[in-house]
Length: 207
Image 1: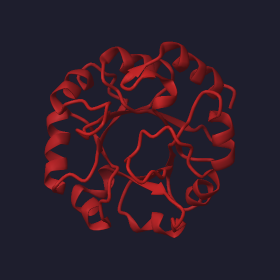
Image 2: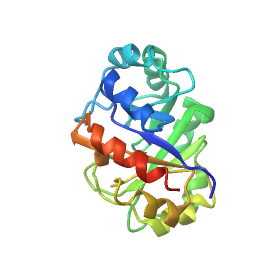
Image 3: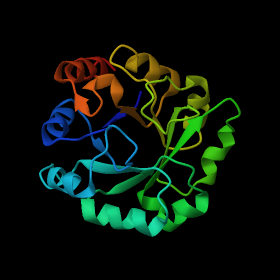
């Protein structure tokens, strides 16, 4: 199996960022959605991003920002490279931000159409668990059978309830490009747990 990349989301401190990199993360996510308990301001993110190795790919999480231009402005202010659009953004919205710097997040609800993953101009699609009231960070496990079908069509990030205890099973079931872990390695929202990060690293090294 081709090596699966790791994204740790909900970074709020330099210590957590460095611990995540030590765990093997190649992608780090910063949540710019004000409604999130893991919210970080663009300027706070910049202070962290400036101190990271240059090969780490930083990702900003956005939910229904008023305009693509505003997303681009926040990326510039924060120094973050990619925009993860985690709301109800349209394909045209993604195109205006720029396909090469968009990860479009989709929530796989009961009526989810797998073929819709190819409709979005994006460098990757992130598939998350569906929740009627929340945009990500739910801790719920996504439908892996739907995710596996999507992974055959696009570069897929698998999110949703991933833990050290289920990460191998998830990867084997879906065969994604990357896995996105958030609450599964936290002691509290926005605070990473060093022991859980070590457990995650140990599990992923088994692949």
